[in-house]
Image (cartoon, rainbow, N blue to C red; front, side, top):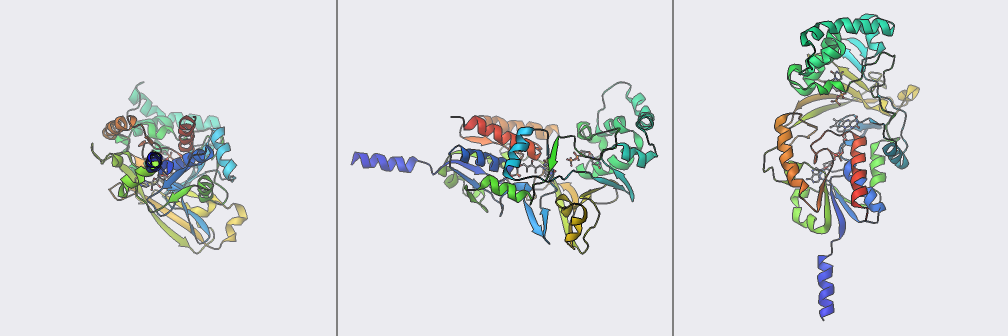
Length: 390
Ligand code: FAD
Ligand code: UDP
């Protein structure tokens, strides 16, 4: 009798899963994959109607449409690149956005093609001399001190013409603030090159999964229990009881019932349209860098996965115009706001999170940090290594 009672108690106490993973984005899915490999049982839930988080693609007119914004995978981390390629091969897509300033076209990032288009200069020496002469005014104004805002930094990097045509309008639309109120570091990540090279990234590896991102997510989550349309907070106690530990990838302030206040974000509204033409703009990404055009860029999704003549295999195309806006509750939280107010609010939540023993916070929402895909995967692999060691 006593033995039976003991067995019953054991059964009641035993959780069904080792890990409940809240959020089926790349962080949650990568952790789940590694946990499964280590023999752990996971339940992955997502409040959305699909898995994959922000890399999810919707099939429209036979084209993979990046529903939450264009996603280009790029990294110099060989381990991460090998990891994703072991799940699905990647194609040779290389991001080479074009800027449209009031009908004038310029290659990005700023390189010899841009300088030729802007000033007619043909050699690196001519381009360097031109950039230097453009920078001279701001250099003497700064008189050796560090740039204090994005405008000063941009002028110091590339000078007046490029700042005014390719940076000012785009940046102010994207961030909803004047360039003089934005931090200098935002613009430092844009490459400046005195070679003819339109590759937007400096990374060693770049591409899009052949067949789209959904295949990558399917591979990561294969054989793992998943539930969509399942909001953690709608069933918090039942879900928590199902597992020994939680990997939480949702917004950190929501986990703590916004007790210190709400974190802020920038968001993007997408206006997606099917066009009755096989090739609308001839490139995946065209940035509209003037202040007057209300959207920041147009994405033509088919160019991520078909190249050359193959573009014409499908008589239709799908484009998305991107409108950058201030985030309101109920909208998708995309970009954390880089200011002191939000940084100190996040620090308060992080202090609580650091004291949890059974909940791990990871990914772009739980860490309130803009992470590209590769660093997200790297962080999840790192947590899995630590957590699944024993
Ligand atoms: P997410 O993908 O956001 O996944 C989190 C998941 O948690 C979501 O699916 C959400 O529904 C779920 N969730 C939240 N709350 C709950 C809850 N209460 N209950 C259940 N589920 C919940 N990276 C690149 O490398 N290249 C790019 O070109 C690129 N472009 C981008 C463009 C845009 C517009 C944005 C916003 C990001 C871009 N990124 C890009 C970054 C990329 O999206 C992230 O690195 C990646 O999505 C992070 O994965 P994650 O798992 O942390 O978050
Ligand atoms: N930027 C710009 N003009 C462009 C593209 C980018 O001025 O045509 C600026 C803009 O301020 C942006 C920053 O460069 O925030 C960094 O560019 P990136 O492409 O990394 O932008 P994000 O990833 O923030 O969309």
